[in-house]
Image 1 (cartoon, rainbow, N blue to C red):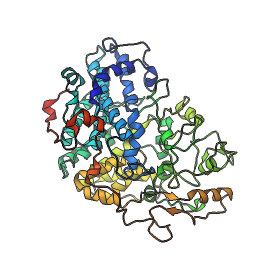
Image 2: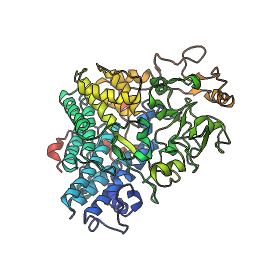
Image 3: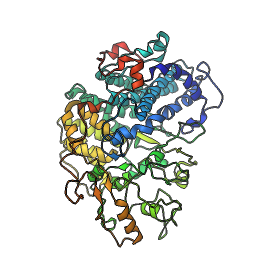
Image 4: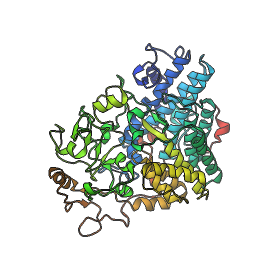
Length: 591
């Protein structure tokens, strides 16, 4: 938790206020140096002083949240990663950095909130900015409690700095932490404007959507489902659906393009930019895409990628001839790219022939005329590569974001709460309440499914399994799937363990040879004889195991990750054997 460093948060925040480059996505601030006494003097300074909360403190978390959200959940294969085999310990570098990043968000949010509260800015702007601070604080706590379970509450930095208690804070039981998050969001909603922002700032309905998702998650934290929380989750999500003025984007893949950084679909997002100051930029393309995907030599993620189990969920088979493949769900191609796939929004300055331009994944790997740096070997460990979080090359970034990219730096937003998520929150809450034919739930579910699957027939009755699968397909690759398991594990952990153990978490071998022969023969040769599944069931090694990978080391304890070892050493109250305290947050804390 790095509470020993909370003293430094206020000082670090002062530096951030003077860094204009991290604020370009919103309103560019003045570029002088300030301190808390003279910075928050008017509307413009308050707005610009909040901007960096949309990017910089989250940087280290965004570098690793895919490993928790996607690798642990079985959506992504990542070699020998401890997140793949449930062996993460408290010294894991990604875990440490993600934890510290989340605590930094909370510390910065507290500091900015208190500074703006005493500002001479107009009440309207002060309220808006304070509401944004509280929403980001709630989001950080939402990630923390779902990742680590019981966590301390830092309501205000100043008292614990003044009394020196930052290394003796006690863990608060997770049910009370959820109540604190809800209380924080309720205050945020009092302050935030209802009108949609044209620049992507958080508004009332963004906080309201998060509130609904927190309620749905907290509904099962006691071990059984709370009908009160489920009803509130249903009502809050329906409010967003019916009254926010937002609609699902017509084309699913458009959600993830830089030109749609701000859209109806994006309720809350990390809003990155490319500037002189490190941490204000998106870096996920480097971590997720194959070598040579952009001009900066900064991509090394090709040897990881979407899992075979996720391919199966989409009905995708790497052994199927690309020329004969028929697909109806557009989300597959927007999530994973395999043999035969082309993209007009990647590499739009490269000629595909027949008057078309864009990316052909096989040309990228095997055609030196098309790609001078063609590596000559397909890297995806399960026969596909990632798509989400990628921007492409410099021509693509310029076209979508109106600015140049940089090495490990681009400006495509990371959507961490989407409108479709809120639609499915509503459907899930209604089904868990037993309302399987609820018209609002059916409308929400069918809208999400119908947008992406042209062959889909509208459901007239919903089951939990319908929503469970739909959430996986809709949000795959977006860092959310593991937290679905965490939410469900609160009240049905055995089902979660069984589901995870039934996954095929192995690699798919020898796709490269089949792909290369297919490409070099111009589609005439498609021989998948050598393709094998690492976790194979039959003698030929081509049929994936479907009866369960029983050796997977997943237990009830797997749904909570350990604190960083350094934090426990500094504050023994964080130890796994320490009982958390119970706190009545609504009487103990106040905004």
